[in-house]
Image (cartoon, rainbow, N blue to C red; front, side, top):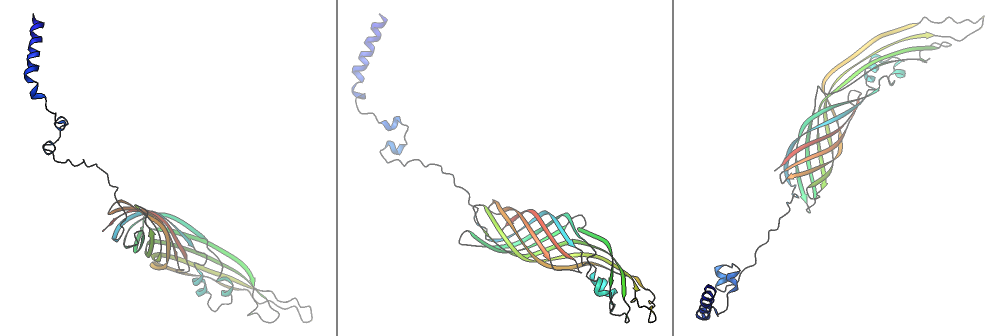
Length: 309
């Protein structure tokens, strides 16, 4: 009986409700569309999310920062006491012979440095950057220090002041000591580079200034011996003149904060981490004009971080 009753109820429902469901079905309702779409209005297509790559191409403007590095200083002391020797032997025939002696050696020294920089960039044609920068470095641990000590003895002949038939032979000894301590140095340089996305490789040239503490000393002594011609009797023999001794005589100099002037050049690269923050790495070579007879150069490798305004 139950199956028959269920069949009868389904048939009655189909007959009575058929007309109400006979119309077309709105598919938009089934798709979960908006009310506007349900009312027949057009629906805009959904927007896709498209990530934008950050741009780090603007280097124009002022910037400043700090750096640390490792420096190697080379000091050529070869003629480091030449002016002292020249003064000791002024108006002496021996001076012309010994003043150019290379009594001291070349010395290299290495040390850490730290400092800062400030500059301005102008960017042209999108990828070309030119600018000017002031850079300062302080040598750590008391400065870049180099020293040399040595002596030299030579025998030579000079008859400029000898009487006729007499020959003067000199045995001269020069002892020298010298030291140089570079405390700090600064450069003012022009630079130019090209932009590659967030990278700015560059080259630079400019002028350099350093402060150097200098200590040097020279001691000179010599003996003059007369060896006359061997003249047979009855004209000879010729009696030699007595030996002459000079010195030892010493002249010293101690000066702090002597300014050394020179020029600089090098290569580097700035890398943008953020639109206004960058890191850098660079290599610099500085050559100074002779200072107190010393020839000095400094080669530095450094890394730093800067902020662009």
